Image (tube, rainbow, N blue to C red; front, side):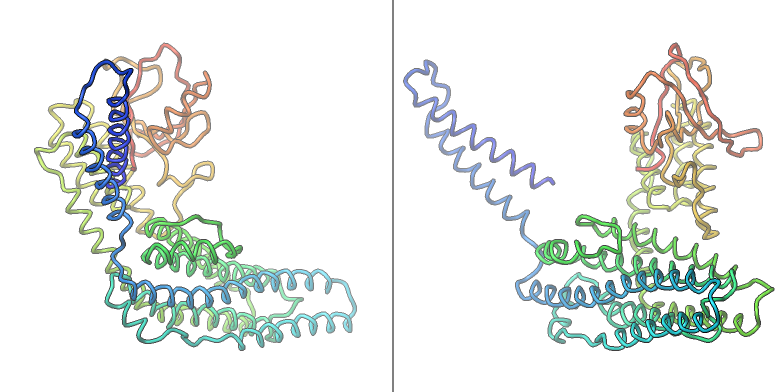
Length: 483
């Protein structure tokens, strides 16, 4: 961005200088401000600078050989992912076939029921034969792999895709089709088993999203041309997944984490269902072995996960050092560091930093004790949810870890009709408030005044309440809880 600004400035000065030179040459201009040779010199220097900054900005830290190796690897991975994506589409078709056969089999005679069951099993055999024909071998030269291993591109992510993510994902679909073929899983099975089967369809689809967004994390590390080629020629055909434009590594990781949380939620539902006591013992054993298989699959990905955890830990430590509060810091610089930690979901660090923030600012800010306490309790609530691996609580369908601005003061310390310092504003006019800018943007939309807030009660617990400010109320000061 900085280089772009320098480029714009240099280009603007070049154009302005050339224009001044032309004016200086014009006979009708009475006042000659600068000598022509000075203007020409300025134009030449600024033009050279503009070209230089443009070259520097567009230059990538990859050699031609490294770019070619990256293009070869991503090309092969993209083709393999396309095959996996096609199987996810076929999985969706299988689900529709399953639902259709279940509806048709109800109320028919035994002979017709057997024929419908056979029709579904024949379809599964056909799908299994197609999966068996899909190649799993790597079609990239060792030279390309070795070339990439010498760059900053994470080679372990590439290895993880070839050795675990891709073959294991295909095997999961294969195993599921074989399960649907078993004698116990018939089209006339019980309601609980229907629910379990439906959940397994969902888990396989969400598992696909996890693999896809992890793949996009890797794409974000690639040379610019490789990224552009992927998003132009492959991404538009990934119709099973949410459509995306070119993502940064952090954006892709966020989507991958979201898919991972969905998968965990479905797995919890599935585990609870499999644990029902009124099930047939044989089917329970089958379902138990199925979950054991899931555990084995997860273990094969352990190495990849450990690498990512190590990277995350390193990134967190780097952020922790950058966001360390210093007594010479400006108050708002300190506050900015706190919410950076909260945005990175480093809630414990944010809480500890809030204690330091209060000690540094309590003599200058009479309200600091109130809003700091509210922020600490809010972040602690998010921390406890994160530790328990539960789904983040939602209000009107919006997760609370993306909501809220906090009231840090009221104009001239006047009494407000309904708002208190420390209130966390979640919704304004029934629209989610995700930042201070969003809060004021919503405020401009109409005269109506209605807020939904979290307010601490006497037990230091948040209560959700609706407030209706009046026009004569003093102004309030609010700050972001997240960046």
